[in-house]
Image 1 (cartoon, rainbow, N blue to C red):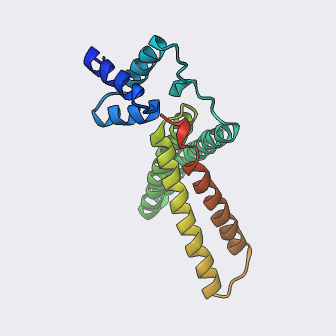
Image 2 (image 1 turned 180 degrees about the horizontal axis):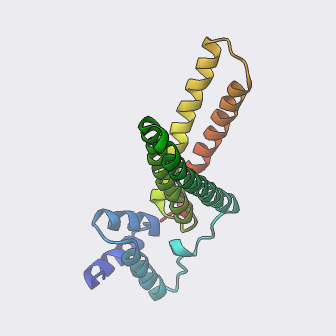
Image 3 (image 1 turned 60 degrees about the vertical axis):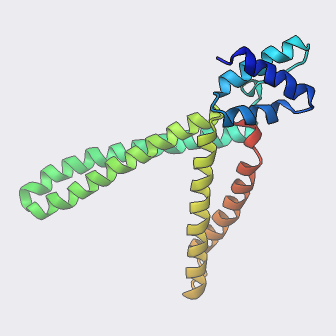
Length: 195
């Protein structure tokens, strides 16, 4: 809860020509929460009959919704595949473990991989849901994943050129590189929608 002294400070800042965003940024630096800042700005705005657009009232762009839904679908599909690998890996472990213990160790590694992959895909689902809720950490995390993908695809293109391999893999890497660059540009320009 913001006290009356801070509300007076906000009124003074508004009278001096500062925007709500500038005032909000200053209050964030003073360790106030987004909700406290939003409530205080709305209260001061009502006193002056001003309209204040809260962060939660911003409409999510359709393109961002599609990216978020893509993350959720990708994560769900990957989670299903991971579960199937885990289930069938367990069955294979039981069958092959009776023949030779070495096979049991090998299939155990497959099961470990399946569990790790399942956790990653659950995170993708959570990331997609957080993007729909306009959480800034989700935007930043997605941006980091895009940059990692750009670097990996660039390494793939360079490797293809060095090996004189001009195949579908190189085309895929170029497409991912360009698409990743567009996503990176997009994620930088949608900051205003995120809390």
